Amino acid sequence: MRLLQTELKNKVLQSMMNILDKRREDIIAANQKDLDAFDKNDQALYDRLIVNEAKVDGMITAVKEVMQQDDPVGEVISQRKLENGLNIINKTAPFGTIMIIYESRPDVTIEAAVLAFKANSKILLKGGKEAFHSNVVLVECWHEALTENGLDKDWIQMLQMNREETQEFLRNPSQKLDLIVPRGGERLIEFVKQHAKCAVLVSGRGNNFLYVHKDADWQQALKVIVNAKTAKISACNALDKILVDENLPEFESHLKELQKVLKENKVEILVDDKVSGILNDEQTITDKAIWKEEFLALKSVVGSVSNPNEAIDLINENSGGHSSTIMTKDASTAETFMEQVDSAAVYHNASTRFTDGGSMGVGAELAISTDKLHHRGPLGLKQLVTNKYYVHGDGQIRE
Image (tube, rainbow, N blue to C red; front, side, top):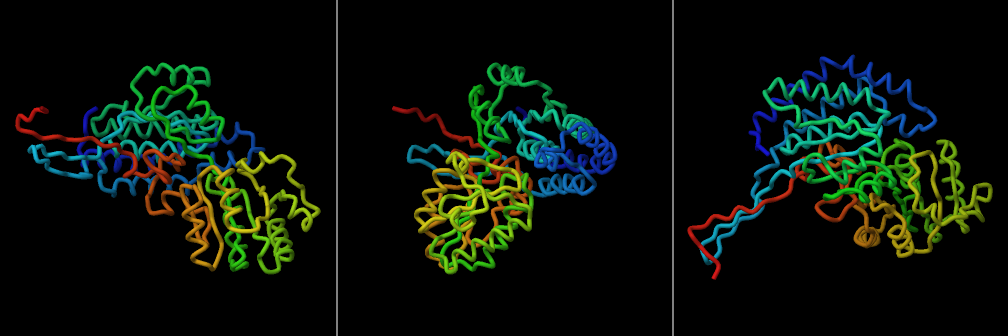
């Protein structure tokens, strides 16, 4: 794969910004076709599908932010000279060809492609059929920007395949694949892991927990819970499970206040056995599998624990490894919680909604990785490279 100069890559991105602005009416009109054909009963996916003026502005901003970032390719990670005279330099390098499989969100077509291209990788975009018309126009915009700057359209490709064709492509790809990112639910992730023949970076599953410690500021906890649960139910960083410490002062009255606040925000409540004795008009959990479920809906489980260790164990056993929060005024307890909870992002007195490239200062993101290999958390520009060793010698041989 040819390494492109930073100046050329940035010229493509500047062209893309201009084209998105020029073709915003076409983009929104194409998106309306997708919206008209979509089943609005799935509110989470419908929310992800919408493209309006603000979304187009967001796409342009995402491209601009990546354009303004330093080129991640060719950065020196380490350098050392050995006793035998070999000079060994470890530098960042492109992955090669990245395939991303995603559902509903047309803005991923922009964010994934801009990151891959600036990181000097080709990208294959396999979007969901529900966003077909939107993605066609957005990829046309990319191709126009590439052509305008003398580059091949193959840098950014849209794959149009059904489930069976996708399965066959994963097993026997028609071109070299270096990395696949399935950005969606557990069924999609398992499907890709089952059939892919190259590295798969897992992303997308939330099922996030918040633990209210006995020394929490209760009003602050309520504010954080409402934001994490209701601000954007379709996001993988939305809150699903709320654990309240039984030793919290006024435990029963606080649970009833939490119930009232969640009901005011139209959140369906499920409760464990202990909480059901207090909130007896709510549905009690009968299947423990619910603890592992990501809702993507105005729905939440409220449970109780007797201490931080119990909360940590419950989270580590059931969460998706995405984001977890502790609400407490005790800094020592917070530190222990954050060290022991096995999530990509752990929070102290803050909403899980901040697990996002833009909110974490990374900028546009390819996905939120919950894998432990390579990188965890937002996959921004600097995380979308691998590495390569450059070894300079003067005729050395290994004896």
